[in-house]
Figure 1: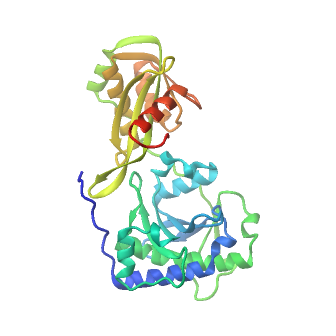
Figure 2: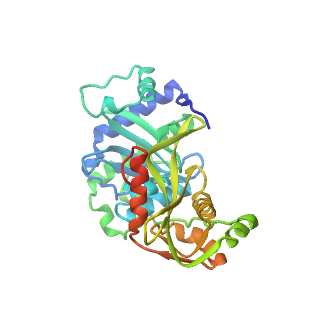
Figure 3: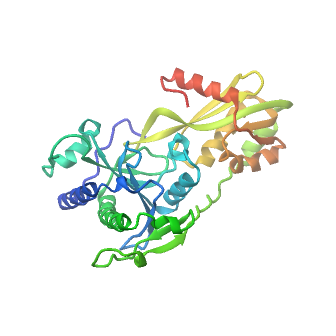
Amino acid sequence: MTSKLAPPPPIARETVLALIAATTGFAAAEPWKIMADCDVVGLTDPKTGEIRLAQVLGNGGEVFGAVFYRRASGIRWIINALSTPGNGLNLDAMEGMDALKVELVLKRHMLKGDLELLKAVHFKLPGRGRGWPQFQSSLPGWMPWFVDQTEAEQLLADLPRLTAFHELFRQHPSLFDEYLPGEIPFLPNPLPNRPLVVADLDWRPLVAAPVSDASFKATEQQLSQLRSLEPAPSSSFEYGCRILPGRSVLENGRPCYTRLGLLVEHRRGIMLGFELSLSTVPLSESVGLGLVNALVKNGFLPGKILIDDKRLAPILKPLCDSLKVELTFSKKLGALAEANAALNNFAGVGAH
């Protein structure tokens, strides 16, 4: 961990110029006028064969640009977001994003590193308003950051292909109506040296890959500590492990999210313990260690633990089963919500 912010990764001048040209062409087409964020397009990396999913932003009139979801984690994120409306607005869900984004923003929203990148190639925006190109990289657990050379080249490969699909979509606006939700059109690789036609598309059903090895595996020492706690079979504790909004930590010079593990007594709402961890570590580790440490510090082993986040169930079930503690999901846990709000307010951030 370091307290100094790392400088943006270097990108070759010719790559920046080409990427700005591709972004200008994308922006001039204004694809958000006809494409919604559910009109996802499949792309295949011309060098590696890796598949990515592309999404146009801006149909809602707020954020204008494009996102390219990569690797199993990013593809899982967008598929889950599309199948669960509102999921993408949840901060705990945002930490799992693995994607590259091009966004057209106002100059005042640009970071110093963004402006320096454009200044180095003498970029000038004709006119005013949204149009300043901002390129960002998102990795699971990390806050958005500047793209590096490899990522810039990926954007340079993907953005023109998304623009080409938009031209086809403009001619066939009911393109997605003939297919089931979850079926995604993949573009040919490489693109033909002509405008795309409907027959070029390869429609594939995609499902989110399951998260492997999601359970927390306690050590024998941890299990021994937990089993030595005073049993309280009639007690119920509420437990959650969430992203702390408005707070980040620098890890290797790059900001990452912070998770807050919180244990609360169910009936009286007494805060029993909390644990902070970096979101760059696996969620299972944050969740499991947070609960173990909170229980050990509290000194009691309850008969029931209630959670309001379904992601925690497969992580904690083996541990709870071994301790003969009932693990129960509840859509709303009032004591946990109040405790979270109190800690967030104490830290100077909004309630989560």
